[in-house]
Image (cartoon, rainbow over all chains, first blue to last red; front, side, top):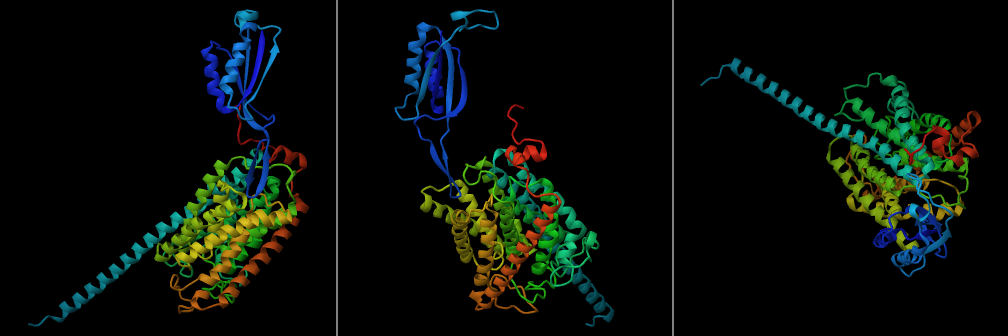
Length: 112
Length: 449
């Protein structure tokens, strides 16, 4: 099993959700996060006082998939979240040691 | 044919009785109209403090200080009301010395439904009293913009009480009280024109704000760390409520539902509009973008500047005063504040002190008896420069100077007293935690609830 952690532009949330639904992925956890990579943030001015806002709002997807589905999921997220501009975000993939469904104790691929 | 004398006499008596009844009815109708407008105006001016100023200031601070900042405004509505009822009204509006009134109306003794002809002959004195109270409430609330995010609540309450007694009541008496030093209409030796409180309200609060900002010192982290407004949305709502409430403040200062009230209403609105454009325009040219905060700050600056002039100037000068105020206050809060590095948290000095001073001086230029023909010692006199009375500008400057001096010295002494007794500034830890939790034990936004 792999855990996919995708950090994307907030306005791409619906498109990515839709893309995942279309390839049959039902489970995901979404959080609103702040951060930045190479995107430099922006300047705000309040009564002449300048502030550089470098932690920008992003949305993070966490989902765990069977190994065989990894590539198509990554591709679906990438295609849906891409604008081609700096700030589109990143995807990280981790190995998952175990997954357990709390309701009935299913383990492994059956649990995700 | 001969009409019997008795019949003629009867007719004359009837006629006179009917005339008397008609006169009484007309008087009562005027009184009803004036009283309705003045009670409405009183409510409008209260609306300026809460929720107007509470929202305007509350949105501009960080989220951890939103309640404490709103509390500063709100608590004035309670605290000043009590002081006003006990002694405040009397110290301002009963006759005394040129500097402070007496105790004739202490505990609101004799302040009821009968008019006080010295001030407003067509409305109950109780209406006049409650209307003037709302000015005494908002003035110290304006100062809170300078000490927000770092003052102890207890020190704020003591400061406000002493400030009302030592700065506001004397200043209001000098300008508006019978026999006050600066009262142009009721026997002042330096006749200053201040229709709705440019000196009394805005210069005193603005200058006191600067003294508070200097005395308390900067907030922790200012200006190196970003300290942004936590909710511009609240501030916009607050500023718009201030704009609306200001009609009660300025047009209500006519103390009657008269043509003068209309003229003050129009001047007020025009100045606010021009100032919003002035500030936003200056900002657009200066930093490339017109901001919402610029728009609302400008509108408040215009409202401040037109306050002393509103019942004396024609519409076009009102537009000009507004436009100048918007640009001048923009320069004050962006350039001058940064030059001296003082931390006037919400720009109470840059907007109220600067805008109030500009407005008070321009009143001396544009005041005209074509708008306000209230007689002084029984005759209508030329008012400002446009009436050919250039000397009025000097009278205005004297009024400005006295209010600056009283506010600066008074505020400094009061702060010293507060500092030596209870301390004015919260501890570093409390400031870091935020005043909402450290002073009041609550939070503005509880997301998990």
